[in-house]
Picture 1 (spheres, rainbow, N blue to C red):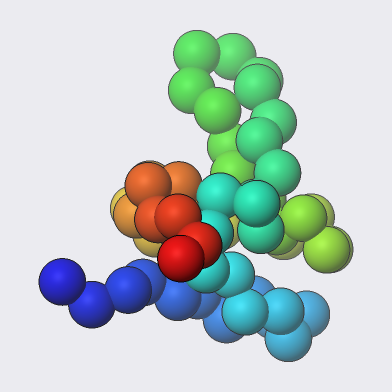
Picture 2 (cartoon, one colour):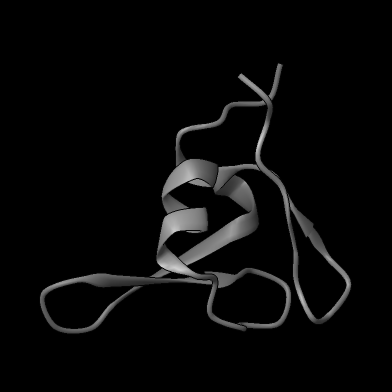
Length: 54
């Protein structure tokens, strides 16, 4: 299976859970870019959360 990556509007390439910041507001968490705080779409964040650096 191919690795998922996401290019944030700030230019950061998000690859792993370490690249995300979790914000718990209400029932469901919101995942954001750790560099700039831009929200990451939920489906992409879920895929990134489960990838681990080699």
